[in-house]
Image 1 (tube, rainbow, N blue to C red):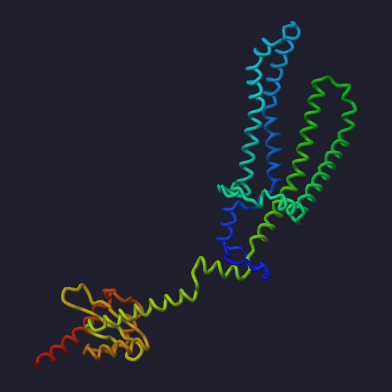
Image 2 (cartoon, rainbow, N blue to C red):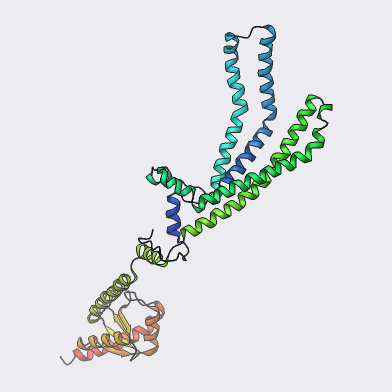
Length: 359
């Protein structure tokens, strides 16, 4: 999170991944209650439809048992105790599938909107949440007013949908007295099913719009001022000035170590004015090794140290360019350059031999 929150600055910067993760840890996510409502109502309606035969069978069994006691005039405490376990068992068969389906719908609603993420941060007691004054502020805030308006619109439209549905079904309801009990029950259940489907379609539209609105509000809330973005960058990536200073020091240390290796080299191969590569080769080495290289000022410094230590400087433009581009400091020369480097070293060893002979 940013260290400063300048209320004078406009929040124009898009939230960074780190800020988004901080919001998720605090439990601040785009969550629509309408999505939960749609899934819960739909799941419960489906569970009731799927288990309707079981519910009717269990209810009929309880009714038969109860009325058999009533007819015989034996219903009392003993009969109630006798029915107790059967009652609990029947209620379990009727209620458990519906409750389980509702619970699954709630979990699915969270996964759809937020994904799999667990945090205990929203459960931590905070004074601003239980403070009545803050509660009043939230109630009369723009967000609270929006929620009230949404609820009013939703109830109004839902009432209109129910009224239109009842009006459409009224001709059929007027002839129910001509039907038997089974037909009345069937017609009523079909009508209720159609009403539930109509309400679910309406609520699904409301849920989609509400989720988009919640997403928009969260994005707006997560936006950062430029100062916050800079402070977060410093916190996460480090101060650019400090990083630049560290890199500069690292380059100086590396350059100093490289220059300390030049006196140990066997030959300096040059461009001749722009490039300088210091090669070291001793008995027992697998191949010559580049111990220093540089261009421009660094090349001149390498040649200066070479002259001070009487290290031969050989001009070979193609070889110098190839080695400067392809070989890093500390690496052995590749096999394809063996012949060219061997010619240079042979020349250097001849020079050393001539130098040692007179002495």
